[in-house]
Length: 569
Image (cartoon, rainbow, N blue to C red; front, side, top):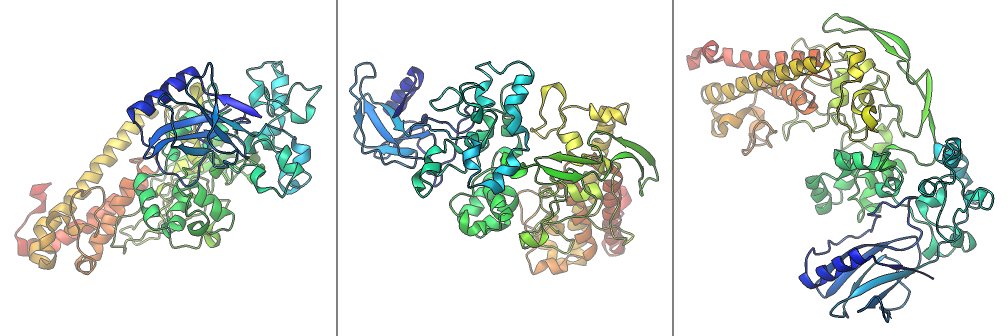
């Protein structure tokens, strides 16, 4: 039996929390790993939290699957340690109601017994046969290639269970535990292999990014960068929406909940299977397949000659990083040319296409249309805007006007996942213009020019709409007069009109189609978020179409209103 004694610093913290009554413990139906430990899932119990509960103190810890027992003492030097119940805790959390005035805790748990991949593959060959082809399987060899195979600070992340009983010792005595294997991510599995029907020792299936972060942090700061990104947390209002109505777990969760999306990819209904475990961010396993590599065809390999339909400019783009065919552990391709939308009402399995750009899987317009009246388009049209396939044009031409940037072989990842200056790219921010220098002599200046121009045009279009709402509407459409400046908006206004209400569902029928098309284009450009960097010519085309539609509506009513729009602008 292995015990974890909490460090002195943590013991002091535990005592202060207990006495002061700070930090109430949040209820959590499913407990996920919350700490990073070299090697992945901890092989022994590690205390992760302590907080005052309504009737005592709540503590939590992490470790492999199995039974645990909590012990309490009033003196860590002399003991004694008193067991708080039997060794039957499977939840890795407990509330202690019988307390010493100065309480200390520790947890005993299952001894770590590692087996190695060859034992796992006996039953799990459908998965294990592919794991051997991933970089994880060769982690020890990679260490040996730089003569660090005896470096104790490196071995926990390049072997199985290093430093723990039955874990890796050296390549001579424990060759079966070299490399990153199943038990790094699922915990010790020898007991499961010996008693496969015992549900208490089934290895963990853990979606938390902290499992990966144990090794992909520090000198390789993937976890830290991911944690700082929008992918690192479920959007609060979306989480509360899914909590209030589990039906939204399937519709919203497909892009806002990591556990829900993985359930959909597995053919499950997350509204049922994830009803108590939807509050999981877009973690590593959502984008990366930990068990296998995929082979993709590069749509833009070599020198690409691209003519921008809107500008007429011809650009030669040299794509020589990936090759004609490339492999990685992503669930989706890096680039694609086909339009793609996944609306909240779509049956996921009917629409899902693994060959679509991995970012475009969620960063698409969700099938928004100009005729929608309830609310503005979702804040995710980036893929469609890059391809110029969303929005309405004055000419009536079906959109399909891709940006030059859409022909980069890594598309979104080209700019948003640059690896300069030690970055792994997992903050998904454009923190450097290094890649832009391949085509632009002054990318920073060009970005400022584009963003300032598009931002100004967005405000100009909005001013036209506001003018229409406050000057044309009272005379031409008195039924909308009560909404004032919000008369052009959706029933639930978008971000450009905070704090008010737009026309009701019934009154939306009074809003001219031209105004509906204009507001639709305006919000697509705004919610693309790049202010022209993704597809500036197309942004301009959409905003000019919007302006023409609104001015046409103003002109129609100039006589009755005795107004001169030129004097305003």
